[in-house]
Amino acid sequence: MSEVTNTQVPGTAAPAAGAAQPPAAPAAVAASGTGQQTDKTYTAEELAQQVQEQVQKSLAAEKEKWEKDSESKVTAAVAAAQEEAVKMAKMTDDEKAKAALAKQQADIDAKAQALTQKEIRMDAAAVLTEKKLPAEALDFVVGNDAKTTTENIDKFAKVFNDAVQKSVEDRLKGTTPSGGGGSGSAADTSKMTDAEYYKWVESQKK
Image 1 (spheres, helix red, strand yellow):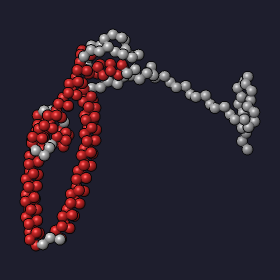
Image 2 (cartoon, one colour; image 1 turned 180 degrees about the vertical axis):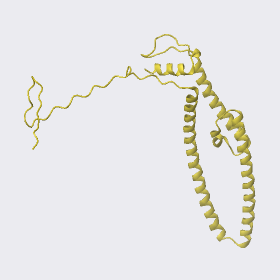
Image 3 (tube, rainbow, N blue to C red; image 1 turned 120 degrees about the horizontal axis):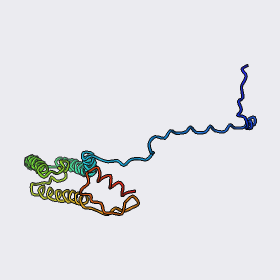
């Protein structure tokens, strides 16, 4: 049988038999740098991407709502078709002929409306591009006719441009820093680069 060598540091008492051994002291962590986290700065491209992501989230929520509304309309249309089939079964031949003629005219009107709607969407897409508005807004500005669509685009453009203008004004005007991280003097943000400005904004949150 192998002998177990018990090494003891001189000047210390040996642990009692069966006693739990003290945990080993944690290894010293090598210091690297100051240990402080540096402020994150953003390029113009990164900021534009963040804005685009926020727009995408808002549009996705609106699209989900629109899809639910569309699904409800489809369900109602199916129910109406079933009801119409029951009516047709109870009609005389003359009534069926009249109903078939009315349906034919309705189909013609629906195809004409679909063609008009396609043209409206194409025109609306061109206007959004011309006004430098997000193309994802197309589904939300297109109405049943050209007039309604134009009104919707104008309303959307005003809200969108007002938001952009406010952002620009907040970016350009000099404000007095507040909070523990501020120096107490006014900061002229109009002379800052994008990276300096957003670094300054982050410093005011501390």
